[in-house]
Image (cartoon, rainbow, N blue to C red):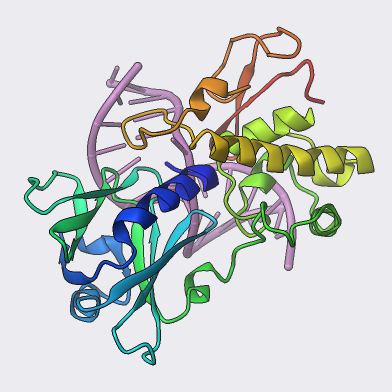
Length: 272
DNA sequence: TAAAATGTTGGGTA
DNA sequence: ATACCCAACATTTT
C-alpha cells in the first residue's frame, strides 16, 4: 500500500511511542512474513534489544536496535509493508486481529503489531541494512539527488517513463500514485520514452517527482482504504483514481490505461 | 463474477 | 545488459 510519503509519515509517527522502548518478546503468526534470517532467529535475538532510532529508506522502515552495552554491534530490523501492511502500537491487552502477522512485545505494556491482510509484507533482521536495500536507486528527496545526477541516471535508460519511475533501482520510493502525479506535473505522457526527452522535459520530470513526493509528505500521505487512515493527499490527486473526471488544467477527462500490469492515469490533452 | 487494489521478484523472450 | 511480458504471492472490495 504505502509509498515513500506514507512510509515517511508512518516513521515520523512511530518515533515518539517507540524510541527507547525495549523489545521483550516476539510472536509470529504467519511465518513467511519473516524474510530473514528465520522465525527462530528473530524470536531469540530480538528480546532484550532497545529501539534506538527509526529511519526510512525508500519504502522500507529501518529500526536501529541496540543492547545496553553500546559496544555491541547494532542490529537492524527492516519492514516492508508492501500492499496492505500496517503498523499499530497498541496495549498488549488489545485482542489479536485476524490479520496480525508479527507482534513485537515491548516494555511499558504496549506492542508493535505488524498487520498485513494480503501477507505480502516482510520483516528482515540484519547486521547491515544494505543487505536488503543495497540494490535500490537514490532517494529522490536527498541532497545528492540533484538535477545533474538525475540527468546522468536517465541518460542510461530508454524505456517508457511510467515503468521507469516504478523501477526501484532507478529511483527508490516512487509507487503507482506518485508516478502518475509526477508525470502529470511534468506534462509528460506515461508512454513517452526516456531517451526522447529534451533538456527542458528532463528538468520538468525531476521537478515533478520531487514536488509530488513533497506534497504527499506535507499532507501525511494518501489514504484510499482502511490500510492507511491518517493522510489527506487523496483529496488532492490530479490524475490517480480520477478516471473520467476533468483534468485540473484543461478540463478534459482523465484517461486510464494499463502499462506493465499497473494502471496509469493521465491527461491525454496536456501530457505529451 | 470478474476485476482491481498505494508492491516486488523471478522466469522467459527478444 | 535492457526492455517487457507473465505469473506468483494472498485477500478483500467493487
